[in-house]
Image (cartoon, rainbow, N blue to C red; front, side):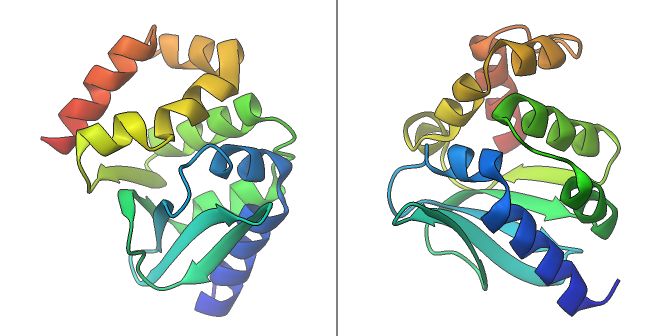
Length: 151
């Protein structure tokens, strides 16, 4: 997949999927998610003026980096992503498959206070039921897992 096509598919996913907009809405104003496409195209997404936005370049205020392979972009672009639980589960499946790697690049305090956990809570019980299958049975276990990702 060409870099242009990879960026275009990612932009469509971020900016047009309802669940992505709902997730990004939970972040504090000015906070972005860093997304590195195939570890060669730096991008970031955020919520502003009622819209989810993806831009090229490295963000100034991000605490999480997603390293995303083209296979994950292809699969997620085809997923309906009508609600946050199903979208979160699809992203988690890509993490488990090795197509997405999540890195904590900022402080754990920011992870806890800048809206990232609100996204998980908003995804609801179906999402947490999926995570529970992998030992993350409640928000406290998720927080401990996040702390380990930073180490």
